[in-house]
Image: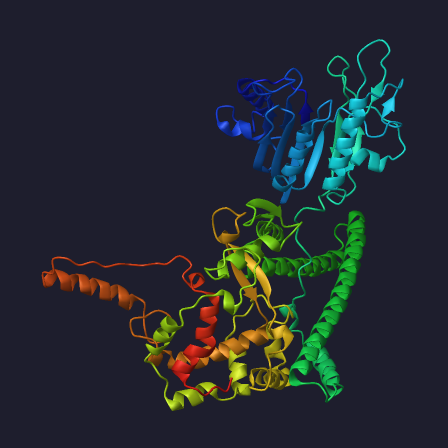
Length: 638
C-alpha cells in the first residue's frame, strides 16, 4: 500500500504509525520487538524541508507475506519512499511518490538515480499533474502553466526510464478522474494518481479505482494487481539432459542402436574424426529425445484411459458394492496408477538429489515434488552486486555482467586494476630472472620409461576404464549425454570417441571438438551474503567425453606423482596420508621440549585464494611449457 500526504513530520510519529500498522497483525508481528518496523516505511518532512504541511509518503506491507526487505530509501522532504524487496523468489521495488506542484528538476533527477539502486520499479503516487488534458481532466478548463510544466517532467522521466502509465496503456480512450475536490460544484475532477512501471515487467497488470468515504480523502484509491512477474528472476528452460531411466528399457536400447548404425553408415568420408563425433552426438540426442517423447505420450494416453475406466467402475460399485470382478479390477487399476505416480516421484527425487530417500520408500510422492520445488527456488540467484558500481543488478535484467566483472578482476594480473581490460602478455610485468630461478630449482625428473608411459597413445581399454570410473548420476555437460549413455553404447560409440580424442590431442590437430571444449557454468552458493559474487563457487559442467580424457590423464599421473612431488606434501598423493604432517608437528614439538630448545615457533600459513593470487599468465606458462619441460624433458607427444 502506497500512501501520500501522510502529514508525518517526525520520526517518533512515524514509529507510532509503524506500531499501529503492526498491531493490525498482532498474531504475526510482535510489537515488543523491532520486527514491526520491517513492514511499514514512512518518509517524513525533515526540519528545513519546504512545504512540510502536506509532504510525507509511506509504503505498507502485509506482514503475513514472506517478504525480505533488501533496501530502503527516504527522501528528506518526505516526497518519496522506495523499498526493494524479494517476494516468492521475485526481486522488485515499490516506490511511493508525492510529486511537487511545480517543476523541481532535482526531484526527478533523484528518481533517475534511484533506478539503479531500486530495479524493477512499481511506482505509485500522487503526481500532482495530468498527462492527458482531454482524458485526465474533467471540468472547466483552467490549465495553469506549472501543471503543464510538471507534466513535461513526468513524461520525460517515463521516457528515460522506459515506464508506462498502466491505466492509460490499458484504457487509451477512457476518461477517468482520481481526485474530486470537496465542495458544492465538485469540479474540476482530475486523474492525478497513477501507477508507472516497465511494460515488460508483469503479465497483464490490472487497475481498479476504489470508492472511499468522501470525508476521508478527496482522492480515489487506485489498486494495481500484477500477474506472476515476468521480468523478475525465474527458472529458465535449462538444457536437455538424457534420462538414464531409459537405459534398462531393451526397446529403447535396440531402437537407438539400430538408428545409430544406420546414421553412422551414411556419414561422409570427408569428415574429420572430431566432426564425425559431433554429428554422432547430435544424432544420439535426437534419437533419445524422440523415443522419450513418444513413450511419454503413450504413457499419458494409458493413464487417461485407466482413470476413465476407474471412474466407470466407481460408478458401478455405487450400485453393486460387492461385485467381486469390479473390485478386483479397481484394485488392479489403482496399482497401475500408483506406479505412474511413483515414477513421477522418482523423477522429482532425482532432480532434487534425494534418490536415496526415494529408494528407501519412507516418503510420499508429495514430499519429493515439494523438495524439488524448494531446491529449485533456493538455487536461484535473484540479483548480484556489480563490483564495478557496488549496485545490485537483477539477474533477470543482466545475468552475466556482474559475475563476469568479478571473475575478470579475480584472475587479472595484479598490475591490471581496471575492469573490462584484456590482459595480454605485455600487460604483465614478470621477473624473467626470478621465473628462471624457480624453474631451475625443480630437481625432480621423470625416468625415460615413465615419460614413455605417460605419452603413449590412449587405448580403447583405457577409455572404457575411465568412463566406468566417472561418478554415476552426475550432471552432464552441454551435450546432455552422461557417462551411463556412453557405457551403454560403448561398443558402437567408443571407437569414434577415441578417434576424436587422438585427433584432438595430436601434434597436428589444433584442439578437441567444440562440444568437448564447452561447459555450462553453475555457481554454487557457499555462505554469507547471497548478493555478493565472491560467495559463489563456480563449477564447470563439462561433457562426459571430456571428463573421460581428464580421468585418463589423472590415472596416468597418479602412477608417477610420488616420484616428482616432495615428500613434505602428504595430501592427494597415493601412498601418503595427510595425518603424517600432523604427527610430524607433534614430534617436532616433543623434540624441542626434550632437547631444551628455549625458543621455537611453528608458523601455519593458509593463504586466502592462494591460486588466484598468482598471475594467470605466469601459471599458464609454468603449466604448459616451463614446468612440463623441466619435469618431462623436451619431448612432448601431446
